[in-house]
Structures are given as structure tokens and as C-alpha cells.
Image (cartoon, rainbow, N blue to C red; front, side):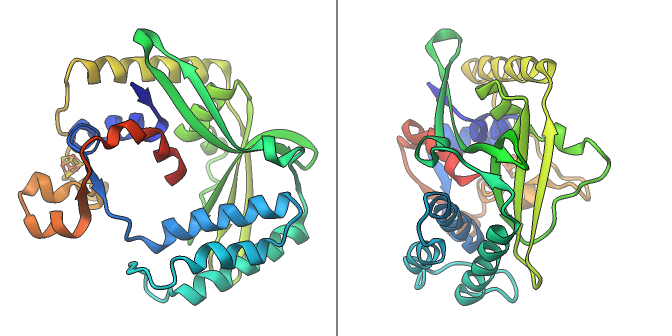
Amino acid sequence: MIFSHTQISQYLRCPRSYCYRYLDGWREKETRAAMAFGRCFEWALAAYFQGNDCTAALFKEWEAFRDASFEYKKGDSWDRLVHQGVHLLQRFAQDDRIRIPRPKENLQLKMIRSLANGHEFVCYIDAIGEIDGQRHLIDWKTTTSRYPEEPQGLLSLDPQLICYSWMSGIREVALVVFVRKHMPEIQYLKTSISEEQRQEFGRLVDTAITQIEAGQFLAHSGIRFPMNGCTSCSHLGLCLGNQQLIDTKLIRRPGASELDWLDQLED
Ligand code: SF4
């Protein structure tokens, strides 16, 4: 089987949810505008580093979703998102803090790692380049609120960055966060992942896969306030037997597990 960070993190969050999605084929319908916009924005960033017109690239990609029946957050719209995106691209160019040498090779890098029992782990890394002259593995994020920067060192616990560091062997990692708000802001958040963290993540992956192979899919429901993972879980309708929720949120695609590595592109 091919595993990804999305799969393992979903298993660790709730094995039952993993089972619904990857074994039974219940996938979330694409209804969130912000997620589709984030992918379009990454295309625009690729155009920027390849020396092309990134604003035109953003319009071209986002145009495909102009009539999509998306859920927009309060105050958001197709126009507002593209407007914010253009501001952020301008700001990014003004900051001029990142260099990506040979962008065709160093953007959206596919990495594959062999695991025990013939399994593989696949990930797509957004970029490898220099921030302020120092080499980093870079992950782009688009969001409506700033990422927390306190307490110091918090970012070094980010499981996705630890995963990418484990896959690439690169110690210096960074999130570049494009904050869509009235005054656009870009956070350049850098941290280091230790060898010990990388090794521990490898053990976590091995443990999760062993449990998956053993068919352990117990529900980890989060019914306590305030961290109730069930309220944001797309599979809630299945657990509650609520057909209306199932019809609203999910689509069933048997056999989808063969394309699980594509999940990386959703992050
Ligand atoms: S609703 Fe809760 S228990 Fe059910 S799959 Fe989702 S997270 Fe797990």
C-alpha cells in the first residue's frame, strides 16, 4: 500500500474515520472554497518562481471555479478571494525573501520512501529553496488567520513539517503563511527538526501501519468541549446515522484508496 501524511494523521486522529475514508471510500465533497483557492494560489506561486505572470496564473486557475457551488465563509466571495490573492502575491514579490533555484525541480517535489512489508510512503513537498539566504524545505499555507508563533519553538512540533523532514532528511524547515485578511500579511516561520524527531516519526508511521494491517479501527470520538474533533469530522453523519449529513458532506468512491497519495495536494 501507499501511505501519505494525510492518511497517517487521519488514522491517528480517529481510526474509524480512516476506515470510512480509505477502506469504505467515503470522501468529503469538495465544497470549501478556501481549499480550492489554496491550490490555485500555489499554481500562481509556481508561475512566480518560473518567471511568468503570477497574477494571470491565479486568475486562470481560479476562473475554473467561478460558478462552482462552494461554501464561502462569511464575507468571502469569488471576487474577494482573488483580490486578496493578488495583494498577497504583490506583497510576496516586494518582500523578495525566497529564492527557488531550478524551480521545475524544486517545486512540488514528489518523494517516495520504502517501508517494511513492501509499503511505500509518498509526499509532495511544496518547495526547497532559500529563505533569507538559508536553505529550507518550504510548505505554503493560505489561511484567514495568523499561525501562532508563541510559545517559542511551537512550530518544531508541527507533524507535517516533521513528516517532510523525515522524508527529505532536511533539518531546516519553514511554513510560509499567506494570511487572507483586510491587510494581507505573510508569515515566514522557520524551525529545525532534530534527528530524534525524525526517527520518532518513522516509528509512529510503523506503529500506525501495523495497527491498520491488524484491522484496528476504533473510534476516537472527541465529544468533550472545546476540542470536539467530531464536529469538524466529515464522517460525522456515518457515526450518527444521519443521512442528511452524509448526503451533504460525503461522496462514496470505491477504489479511491489507489489514489491516496493525491491527498498530499489537499494539505
Ligand atoms: S464523527 Fe468522531 S468518532 Fe466518528 S469518525 Fe469522525 S472523529 Fe471518529
